[in-house]
Image (cartoon, rainbow, N blue to C red):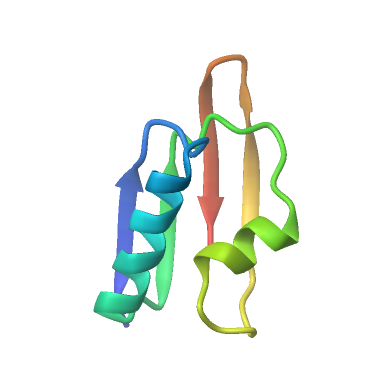
Length: 73
């Protein structure tokens, strides 16, 4: 099983989302833990942009103010 943890320091730009997606595909990651998303809400469509497979589960802990936010896929 390939697991990666990454402190992205914000996921508001398409460049970071693209880099995460490329990393997941390139290394065939089974599970990713993303820290410091700095997002208060995640929509299922945003997860689909990251994950290459239709079968997945995810958990999200919202940021408080300008810090925090955890996403596990």
